[in-house]
Length: 304
Image (cartoon, rainbow, N blue to C red):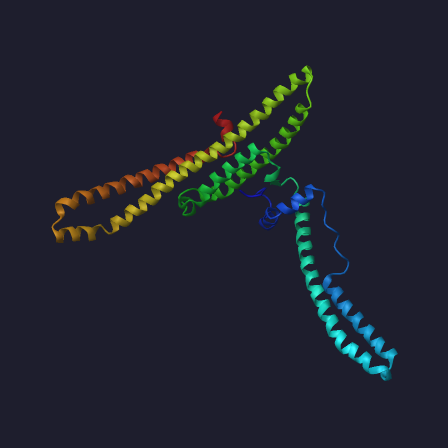
């Protein structure tokens, strides 16, 4: 199950960054904020440090004079390369840290910008996580089916409607989880009879809301079941068609071997099975379309 569910209205590149943001989101939940960007980048610091180092040694040579010489010269000849190596090693590790900081800062800024357009699965309670997982499994079944990828279903509507359904379910479950947690916290402190009289119907409202989300999930699962049946018929139909394509070879073989009396009835049944499977495939695809109709906006209200 995805760790972060993103509103399909978010641009794809930004959505991908948000989906990778679970670790940053958990840090944010604990009060973390990234440090501000440095005024001078690590690359510029490296250049400035190099100039400063060379200038320092130039001054040392200038003030020391040539006559003081040999010891200072050896210090420069041996010390400068050593310092450069140490400097570069330190700077490379600093670059890695800078890249990680910059990556986390980018995610942090996107998370702040798109607040309300994503749901962290960790924020859902156990019941809500199970419902979301069921919805995502059903969506995965549909989108991975060959009847979808090869266009027997309305793949354009699937590509739009199914992510929208996942987001709406995740969004509602996030609100339900948060409100249910607050309700339980209040109730756990003990209620007076007057407050209990109000809290009880509110608890039923929470249960009713969960039932409504459950109905959405079950509609997705019915659609996925219809797609699975269409997939089975589609695969069987193609397998039968492969056998039918070699039918003349079977006929030729049984004629040459004199096995007509045994094989011909089987070959005729193969042809009938192919016709039945083709009809079953049409019915399955039609049933899948009908099941999908329930997922469209406004249909649930009309059916009720």
